[in-house]
Image (cartoon, rainbow, N blue to C red; front, side, top):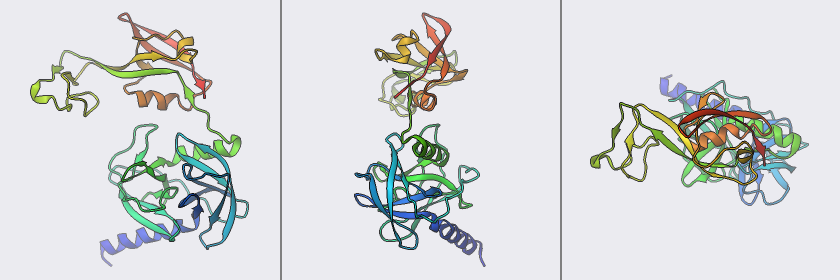
Length: 304
């Protein structure tokens, strides 16, 4: 057998091994579902318009399912199915950039798969790019690593023409919360922020020839003159503080610059949101630059 034949056979084996753990969810239109625990299936929430749905198992059996809860942030919904006899998918042991991926679903037409590629790892709290072509009904299906383990839960409705996934560990955390409480609490600070760059001695102004945004610390930008990042420091300027919010209670003000959260730098609003999302009720320490002086501010993360 050739190397290509061996690879093809291994990929087909991985799909077939995952097949019993994939179901069809008869939502507003047929989508996929992934078994993540005994009697529990994760699927996409945006197509579930009722709390009682029908699921078709791998063998075609019709099963009644109840929605245990929905999480708008990840667009995941957890289904409870009493008569479901299907094994949950095991987590992948970790994936690397450059690894092949398999996007597997069971839409109304039956088991289907497409090949993906791990081009880059996502930032914490972000969607996982799969590199795979979406197909009708793939949402709610499983993104598998080369060893057949679960890498993420698929969603073709987040970005037009692109198939993304909720990282598997995050998806399982959401499933556990929905199973126990029916909801996923979200931590928040009540701050609106935007990135700021303090140039260092090695930085150079962006000239007219560089006004396409590539010199921005955040990649492509609006094209205004700025500073190309080489040294210096990045932070988040507070541009709004919500009335009655945890940020206001801690004394944070418009114009403060957030430099670090619990000793680790924060450089993008999405990063800040992701790092407080799962810490409702906990205290965090923000390093704040105010009036040219750094100070530590303790904030109790709110919940909503």
